[in-house]
Length: 423
Picture 1 (tube, rainbow, N blue to C red):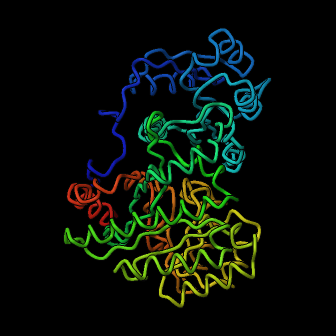
Picture 2: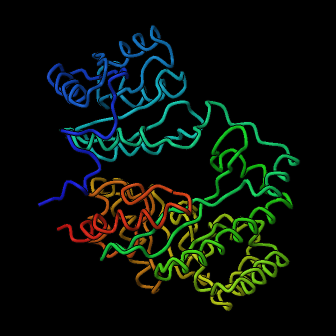
Picture 3: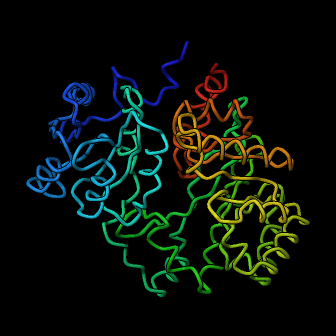
Protein backbone atom coordinates (compact mmCIF):
# COMPACT_ATOMS: atom_id res chain seq x y z
CA UNK A 1 0.00 0.00 0.00
CA UNK A 2 1.35 3.43 -0.96
CA UNK A 3 1.66 5.88 1.91
CA UNK A 4 -0.05 9.19 1.16
CA UNK A 5 2.85 11.01 2.78
CA UNK A 6 5.08 9.93 -0.10
CA UNK A 7 3.00 11.13 -3.00
CA UNK A 8 3.76 14.54 -4.44
CA UNK A 9 0.13 15.21 -5.28
CA UNK A 10 -3.27 13.79 -4.46
CA UNK A 11 -6.49 14.13 -6.50
CA UNK A 12 -8.39 14.96 -3.33
CA UNK A 13 -5.88 17.53 -2.10
CA UNK A 14 -3.91 19.36 -4.82
CA UNK A 15 -0.73 20.99 -3.60
CA UNK A 16 -1.59 24.37 -5.11
CA UNK A 17 -4.80 26.29 -5.60
CA UNK A 18 -5.42 27.11 -9.24
CA UNK A 19 -8.84 28.76 -8.79
CA UNK A 20 -7.63 32.11 -10.10
CA UNK A 21 -5.86 30.69 -13.17
CA UNK A 22 -7.00 30.28 -16.77
CA UNK A 23 -6.04 27.24 -18.85
CA UNK A 24 -6.52 26.37 -22.53
CA UNK A 25 -6.98 22.77 -23.72
CA UNK A 26 -6.11 22.12 -27.38
CA UNK A 27 -7.40 18.76 -28.63
CA UNK A 28 -9.19 17.81 -31.85
CA UNK A 29 -11.07 14.87 -30.30
CA UNK A 30 -14.22 16.10 -28.54
CA UNK A 31 -14.17 13.12 -26.16
CA UNK A 32 -10.48 13.56 -25.23
CA UNK A 33 -10.91 17.32 -24.89
CA UNK A 34 -13.80 16.85 -22.51
CA UNK A 35 -11.78 14.36 -20.47
CA UNK A 36 -8.78 16.70 -20.14
CA UNK A 37 -11.01 19.64 -19.25
CA UNK A 38 -12.59 17.48 -16.56
CA UNK A 39 -9.20 16.72 -15.03
CA UNK A 40 -8.30 20.40 -14.92
CA UNK A 41 -11.61 21.27 -13.28
CA UNK A 42 -10.93 18.62 -10.64
CA UNK A 43 -7.70 20.51 -9.94
CA UNK A 44 -9.86 23.60 -9.38
CA UNK A 45 -8.71 25.77 -12.28
CA UNK A 46 -10.70 28.97 -12.42
CA UNK A 47 -11.46 29.00 -16.16
CA UNK A 48 -10.94 26.16 -18.65
CA UNK A 49 -10.99 27.24 -22.30
CA UNK A 50 -11.09 24.90 -25.30
CA UNK A 51 -9.76 24.85 -28.86
CA UNK A 52 -10.15 22.11 -31.47
CA UNK A 53 -6.83 22.75 -33.24
CA UNK A 54 -3.69 24.87 -33.20
CA UNK A 55 -5.08 27.61 -35.43
CA UNK A 56 -8.09 28.11 -33.17
CA UNK A 57 -5.81 28.04 -30.11
CA UNK A 58 -3.59 30.82 -31.46
CA UNK A 59 -6.64 32.94 -32.22
CA UNK A 60 -7.91 32.53 -28.65
CA UNK A 61 -4.50 33.35 -27.18
CA UNK A 62 -3.97 36.41 -29.38
CA UNK A 63 -7.26 37.83 -28.10
CA UNK A 64 -6.28 37.24 -24.48
CA UNK A 65 -2.69 38.50 -24.74
CA UNK A 66 0.55 36.86 -23.63
CA UNK A 67 -0.19 36.99 -19.89
CA UNK A 68 -3.79 35.90 -20.20
CA UNK A 69 -3.30 32.12 -19.94
CA UNK A 70 -1.47 30.35 -17.16
CA UNK A 71 -1.29 27.01 -19.02
CA UNK A 72 -1.77 25.54 -22.48
CA UNK A 73 -2.33 21.78 -22.50
CA UNK A 74 -2.14 20.51 -26.07
CA UNK A 75 -2.29 17.26 -27.98
CA UNK A 76 0.60 16.44 -30.31
CA UNK A 77 -1.24 15.01 -33.33
CA UNK A 78 -3.86 17.38 -34.75
CA UNK A 79 -5.04 18.28 -38.27
CA UNK A 80 -3.91 21.57 -39.76
CA UNK A 81 -1.32 22.57 -37.17
CA UNK A 82 0.34 19.79 -35.16
CA UNK A 83 1.45 20.12 -31.56
CA UNK A 84 5.10 20.59 -32.46
CA UNK A 85 4.33 23.60 -34.67
CA UNK A 86 1.94 24.99 -32.05
CA UNK A 87 4.65 24.67 -29.42
CA UNK A 88 7.07 26.61 -31.63
CA UNK A 89 4.46 29.33 -32.17
CA UNK A 90 3.71 29.60 -28.45
CA UNK A 91 7.40 29.82 -27.59
CA UNK A 92 8.22 32.43 -30.24
CA UNK A 93 5.13 34.60 -29.77
CA UNK A 94 5.07 34.46 -25.95
CA UNK A 95 1.38 33.60 -25.73
CA UNK A 96 1.30 31.52 -22.54
CA UNK A 97 3.25 31.11 -19.31
CA UNK A 98 3.32 27.31 -19.09
CA UNK A 99 2.93 24.35 -21.46
CA UNK A 100 2.12 20.64 -21.14
CA UNK A 101 2.06 18.39 -24.24
CA UNK A 102 0.22 15.05 -24.37
CA UNK A 103 0.11 12.29 -26.99
CA UNK A 104 -0.84 8.68 -27.62
CA UNK A 105 1.82 8.30 -30.32
CA UNK A 106 5.44 7.09 -30.24
CA UNK A 107 6.98 8.39 -26.97
CA UNK A 108 10.02 9.56 -28.94
CA UNK A 109 7.84 12.23 -30.54
CA UNK A 110 7.20 13.74 -27.13
CA UNK A 111 10.95 13.74 -26.56
CA UNK A 112 11.22 16.13 -29.52
CA UNK A 113 9.21 18.62 -27.46
CA UNK A 114 11.35 18.08 -24.36
CA UNK A 115 14.54 18.63 -26.36
CA UNK A 116 13.45 22.11 -27.49
CA UNK A 117 15.26 25.06 -25.94
CA UNK A 118 12.96 27.02 -23.62
CA UNK A 119 15.73 28.79 -21.67
CA UNK A 120 15.27 32.14 -23.39
CA UNK A 121 11.48 31.91 -23.71
CA UNK A 122 8.82 33.44 -21.45
CA UNK A 123 7.00 30.10 -21.48
CA UNK A 124 8.03 27.14 -19.31
CA UNK A 125 7.62 23.57 -20.53
CA UNK A 126 6.31 21.78 -17.44
CA UNK A 127 6.58 18.41 -19.17
CA UNK A 128 4.94 15.85 -21.44
CA UNK A 129 2.47 13.05 -20.74
CA UNK A 130 1.37 9.91 -22.53
CA UNK A 131 -2.34 9.30 -23.01
CA UNK A 132 -4.46 8.38 -21.18
CA UNK A 133 -3.47 11.23 -18.87
CA UNK A 134 -3.78 10.41 -15.17
CA UNK A 135 -4.80 13.02 -12.62
CA UNK A 136 -1.87 12.46 -10.27
CA UNK A 137 0.66 12.69 -13.12
CA UNK A 138 -0.91 15.94 -14.32
CA UNK A 139 -0.90 17.35 -10.78
CA UNK A 140 2.79 16.57 -10.36
CA UNK A 141 3.68 18.45 -13.54
CA UNK A 142 1.62 21.41 -12.43
CA UNK A 143 3.39 21.31 -9.09
CA UNK A 144 6.55 22.47 -10.89
CA UNK A 145 4.85 25.76 -11.69
CA UNK A 146 4.07 26.20 -8.00
CA UNK A 147 7.65 25.71 -6.81
CA UNK A 148 9.22 28.85 -8.23
CA UNK A 149 10.39 30.38 -4.97
CA UNK A 150 13.43 32.18 -6.39
CA UNK A 151 13.01 35.30 -8.53
CA UNK A 152 12.12 33.98 -11.97
CA UNK A 153 13.82 35.23 -15.11
CA UNK A 154 12.25 37.79 -17.36
CA UNK A 155 11.65 36.98 -20.99
CA UNK A 156 14.91 38.62 -21.97
CA UNK A 157 18.24 37.60 -20.48
CA UNK A 158 18.72 39.42 -17.18
CA UNK A 159 21.15 42.30 -17.19
CA UNK A 160 24.40 41.31 -15.53
CA UNK A 161 25.58 43.41 -12.57
CA UNK A 162 28.76 45.49 -13.01
CA UNK A 163 32.05 44.26 -11.47
CA UNK A 164 32.01 46.85 -8.70
CA UNK A 165 28.59 45.64 -7.48
CA UNK A 166 29.79 42.05 -7.46
CA UNK A 167 32.95 43.04 -5.61
CA UNK A 168 30.86 44.77 -2.92
CA UNK A 169 28.56 41.76 -2.67
CA UNK A 170 31.53 39.44 -2.08
CA UNK A 171 32.98 41.79 0.55
CA UNK A 172 29.61 41.95 2.34
CA UNK A 173 29.13 38.17 2.07
CA UNK A 174 25.81 38.58 0.27
CA UNK A 175 26.46 35.36 -1.67
CA UNK A 176 25.31 32.42 0.44
CA UNK A 177 25.07 28.66 -0.08
CA UNK A 178 21.72 26.90 -0.15
CA UNK A 179 21.89 23.16 0.39
CA UNK A 180 20.04 20.41 -1.49
CA UNK A 181 20.11 16.92 0.07
CA UNK A 182 21.45 13.83 -1.66
CA UNK A 183 19.66 10.74 -0.35
CA UNK A 184 20.75 7.11 -0.50
CA UNK A 185 18.13 5.29 -2.55
CA UNK A 186 18.37 1.89 -0.87
CA UNK A 187 17.68 3.09 2.69
CA UNK A 188 16.49 6.73 2.47
CA UNK A 189 19.39 8.08 4.57
CA UNK A 190 20.80 11.55 4.04
CA UNK A 191 24.23 10.98 2.50
CA UNK A 192 25.36 14.44 1.52
CA UNK A 193 24.39 17.86 0.19
CA UNK A 194 25.13 20.07 -2.77
CA UNK A 195 25.93 23.72 -2.03
CA UNK A 196 24.14 25.97 -4.53
CA UNK A 197 25.00 29.67 -4.70
CA UNK A 198 22.34 32.31 -4.08
CA UNK A 199 22.66 36.09 -3.91
CA UNK A 200 20.82 37.63 -0.98
CA UNK A 201 20.50 40.97 -2.73
CA UNK A 202 19.77 43.92 -0.40
CA UNK A 203 16.96 45.27 -2.61
CA UNK A 204 16.02 42.53 -5.11
CA UNK A 205 15.70 39.60 -2.74
CA UNK A 206 17.03 36.10 -3.33
CA UNK A 207 18.59 35.71 -6.78
CA UNK A 208 19.51 32.51 -8.58
CA UNK A 209 22.90 32.06 -10.36
CA UNK A 210 21.26 33.12 -13.63
CA UNK A 211 21.59 36.69 -12.35
CA UNK A 212 25.29 36.73 -11.53
CA UNK A 213 27.39 33.69 -12.53
CA UNK A 214 27.91 34.82 -16.12
CA UNK A 215 29.27 38.15 -14.87
CA UNK A 216 31.74 36.39 -12.56
CA UNK A 217 33.09 33.93 -15.11
CA UNK A 218 36.40 34.87 -16.68
CA UNK A 219 37.19 37.49 -14.03
CA UNK A 220 39.41 37.45 -10.92
CA UNK A 221 36.22 37.78 -8.87
CA UNK A 222 35.32 34.15 -9.57
CA UNK A 223 38.18 32.98 -7.36
CA UNK A 224 37.09 35.19 -4.45
CA UNK A 225 33.45 34.19 -4.93
CA UNK A 226 34.28 30.47 -4.80
CA UNK A 227 36.47 30.83 -1.73
CA UNK A 228 33.67 32.77 0.01
CA UNK A 229 31.28 29.91 -0.71
CA UNK A 230 33.79 27.32 0.53
CA UNK A 231 34.40 29.22 3.80
CA UNK A 232 30.67 29.20 4.52
CA UNK A 233 30.40 25.50 3.68
CA UNK A 234 33.25 24.70 6.06
CA UNK A 235 31.56 26.71 8.83
CA UNK A 236 28.30 24.86 8.27
CA UNK A 237 29.99 21.45 8.36
CA UNK A 238 31.53 22.27 11.73
CA UNK A 239 28.21 23.61 13.00
CA UNK A 240 26.32 20.47 11.95
CA UNK A 241 28.94 18.35 13.67
CA UNK A 242 28.32 20.29 16.90
CA UNK A 243 24.60 19.56 16.51
CA UNK A 244 25.41 15.85 16.49
CA UNK A 245 24.59 15.18 12.84
CA UNK A 246 26.27 12.15 11.28
CA UNK A 247 29.22 12.85 8.95
CA UNK A 248 28.03 14.45 5.72
CA UNK A 249 29.73 15.35 2.48
CA UNK A 250 29.08 18.67 0.75
CA UNK A 251 29.56 19.15 -2.98
CA UNK A 252 30.79 22.52 -4.24
CA UNK A 253 30.92 23.55 -7.89
CA UNK A 254 34.25 24.61 -9.39
CA UNK A 255 34.26 26.68 -12.57
CA UNK A 256 36.64 26.26 -15.49
CA UNK A 257 38.62 29.24 -14.18
CA UNK A 258 38.91 27.63 -10.74
CA UNK A 259 39.96 24.28 -12.13
CA UNK A 260 42.68 25.71 -14.38
CA UNK A 261 44.26 27.95 -11.77
CA UNK A 262 47.24 26.49 -9.93
CA UNK A 263 47.32 29.36 -7.45
CA UNK A 264 43.64 28.92 -6.72
CA UNK A 265 44.08 25.23 -5.92
CA UNK A 266 46.85 26.14 -3.47
CA UNK A 267 44.56 28.65 -1.73
CA UNK A 268 41.69 26.17 -1.69
CA UNK A 269 43.73 23.40 -0.10
CA UNK A 270 45.21 25.80 2.49
CA UNK A 271 41.74 27.05 3.41
CA UNK A 272 40.41 23.54 4.04
CA UNK A 273 43.58 22.43 5.85
CA UNK A 274 43.22 25.26 8.36
CA UNK A 275 39.52 24.71 8.99
CA UNK A 276 39.55 21.42 10.86
CA UNK A 277 37.23 19.83 8.27
CA UNK A 278 38.64 16.64 6.72
CA UNK A 279 39.09 16.77 2.92
CA UNK A 280 36.89 13.68 2.61
CA UNK A 281 33.91 15.82 3.64
CA UNK A 282 34.15 17.87 0.43
CA UNK A 283 33.36 16.88 -3.15
CA UNK A 284 34.39 19.26 -5.93
CA UNK A 285 31.93 19.19 -8.82
CA UNK A 286 33.22 19.95 -12.31
CA UNK A 287 31.60 19.78 -15.73
CA UNK A 288 33.06 18.28 -18.88
CA UNK A 289 33.28 21.80 -20.33
CA UNK A 290 35.45 22.99 -17.46
CA UNK A 291 37.75 19.99 -17.86
CA UNK A 292 38.09 20.50 -21.60
CA UNK A 293 38.78 24.25 -21.34
CA UNK A 294 42.40 23.65 -20.30
CA UNK A 295 42.66 19.89 -20.24
CA UNK A 296 46.26 19.41 -19.12
CA UNK A 297 46.09 21.85 -16.18
CA UNK A 298 42.63 20.64 -15.19
CA UNK A 299 43.82 17.03 -15.02
CA UNK A 300 46.87 18.09 -13.00
CA UNK A 301 44.77 19.98 -10.47
CA UNK A 302 42.20 17.20 -10.17
CA UNK A 303 45.03 14.80 -9.45
CA UNK A 304 46.31 17.08 -6.69
CA UNK A 305 42.86 17.37 -5.14
CA UNK A 306 42.38 13.61 -5.13
CA UNK A 307 45.80 13.09 -3.53
CA UNK A 308 44.67 15.38 -0.70
CA UNK A 309 41.63 13.17 -0.11
CA UNK A 310 38.89 15.32 -1.65
CA UNK A 311 36.09 13.77 -3.69
CA UNK A 312 35.59 14.70 -7.35
CA UNK A 313 32.31 14.56 -9.22
CA UNK A 314 31.57 14.92 -12.91
CA UNK A 315 28.46 17.08 -13.03
CA UNK A 316 25.79 17.00 -15.77
CA UNK A 317 27.11 13.72 -17.16
CA UNK A 318 25.78 12.97 -20.64
CA UNK A 319 25.47 16.56 -21.83
CA UNK A 320 28.89 16.91 -23.46
CA UNK A 321 29.94 15.15 -26.62
CA UNK A 322 32.77 13.22 -25.01
CA UNK A 323 31.54 12.75 -21.45
CA UNK A 324 32.42 9.06 -21.37
CA UNK A 325 35.97 9.65 -22.58
CA UNK A 326 36.61 12.41 -20.04
CA UNK A 327 35.07 10.43 -17.21
CA UNK A 328 37.30 7.45 -17.91
CA UNK A 329 40.52 9.50 -17.91
CA UNK A 330 39.84 11.64 -14.82
CA UNK A 331 40.09 10.53 -11.15
CA UNK A 332 36.40 10.99 -10.36
CA UNK A 333 34.77 9.47 -7.30
CA UNK A 334 31.21 10.41 -8.20
CA UNK A 335 29.10 10.50 -11.34
CA UNK A 336 26.16 12.91 -11.44
CA UNK A 337 23.65 12.08 -14.16
CA UNK A 338 21.87 15.08 -15.62
CA UNK A 339 18.15 15.57 -15.08
CA UNK A 340 17.62 15.38 -18.85
CA UNK A 341 18.26 11.61 -18.68
CA UNK A 342 16.60 10.99 -15.31
CA UNK A 343 13.23 12.68 -15.37
CA UNK A 344 10.66 10.57 -17.17
CA UNK A 345 13.10 7.73 -17.93
CA UNK A 346 10.50 5.29 -16.60
CA UNK A 347 8.28 6.09 -19.60
CA UNK A 348 10.78 7.09 -22.33
CA UNK A 349 12.71 4.07 -23.72
CA UNK A 350 15.57 6.11 -25.19
CA UNK A 351 16.08 8.05 -21.97
CA UNK A 352 15.89 4.81 -20.02
CA UNK A 353 18.71 3.27 -22.07
CA UNK A 354 20.98 6.32 -21.65
CA UNK A 355 20.33 6.34 -17.91
CA UNK A 356 21.04 2.62 -17.60
CA UNK A 357 24.27 2.96 -19.60
CA UNK A 358 25.50 5.79 -17.39
CA UNK A 359 24.72 3.84 -14.23
CA UNK A 360 26.42 0.74 -15.63
CA UNK A 361 29.52 2.82 -16.40
CA UNK A 362 29.66 4.26 -12.90
CA UNK A 363 29.15 0.87 -11.29
CA UNK A 364 31.78 -0.80 -13.46
CA UNK A 365 34.34 1.87 -12.50
CA UNK A 366 33.44 1.69 -8.82
CA UNK A 367 32.27 5.30 -8.38
CA UNK A 368 29.14 6.54 -6.64
CA UNK A 369 26.23 7.41 -8.93
CA UNK A 370 23.91 10.35 -8.27
CA UNK A 371 20.73 11.06 -10.23
CA UNK A 372 19.77 14.73 -10.46
CA UNK A 373 16.28 16.13 -10.98
CA UNK A 374 14.35 13.30 -9.31
CA UNK A 375 10.80 14.61 -9.09
CA UNK A 376 8.44 11.65 -9.17
CA UNK A 377 7.96 8.35 -7.38
CA UNK A 378 8.22 6.59 -10.76
CA UNK A 379 11.68 8.12 -11.31
CA UNK A 380 12.75 7.01 -7.83
CA UNK A 381 11.54 3.43 -8.33
CA UNK A 382 13.32 3.09 -11.66
CA UNK A 383 16.59 4.41 -10.21
CA UNK A 384 16.38 1.91 -7.37
CA UNK A 385 15.74 -0.97 -9.77
CA UNK A 386 18.78 0.08 -11.82
CA UNK A 387 21.04 0.23 -8.77
CA UNK A 388 21.63 4.01 -8.59
CA UNK A 389 23.30 5.00 -5.31
CA UNK A 390 21.88 8.45 -4.56
CA UNK A 391 19.10 10.77 -5.69
CA UNK A 392 18.75 14.55 -5.61
CA UNK A 393 15.66 16.51 -6.59
CA UNK A 394 12.35 18.04 -5.57
CA UNK A 395 10.79 14.67 -4.67
CA UNK A 396 13.23 14.69 -1.75
CA UNK A 397 13.84 18.37 -1.01
CA UNK A 398 14.36 21.73 -2.63
CA UNK A 399 17.53 23.72 -1.85
CA UNK A 400 17.32 25.23 1.64
CA UNK A 401 19.27 27.60 3.88
CA UNK A 402 21.75 25.92 6.22
CA UNK A 403 19.63 26.75 9.26
CA UNK A 404 16.73 24.64 8.01
CA UNK A 405 18.65 21.39 7.57
CA UNK A 406 18.36 19.99 11.11
CA UNK A 407 14.58 20.56 11.19
CA UNK A 408 14.24 19.07 7.69
CA UNK A 409 16.03 15.89 8.79
CA UNK A 410 13.75 15.49 11.82
CA UNK A 411 10.60 16.15 9.81
CA UNK A 412 11.45 14.11 6.71
CA UNK A 413 13.27 11.09 8.17
CA UNK A 414 10.14 8.92 8.22
CA UNK A 415 9.01 9.92 4.72
CA UNK A 416 12.42 9.12 3.26
CA UNK A 417 12.46 5.75 4.97
CA UNK A 418 9.01 5.03 3.51
CA UNK A 419 10.29 6.01 0.08
CA UNK A 420 13.13 3.50 0.38
CA UNK A 421 10.65 0.77 1.39
CA UNK A 422 8.39 1.30 -1.62
CA UNK A 423 7.80 -1.90 -3.65
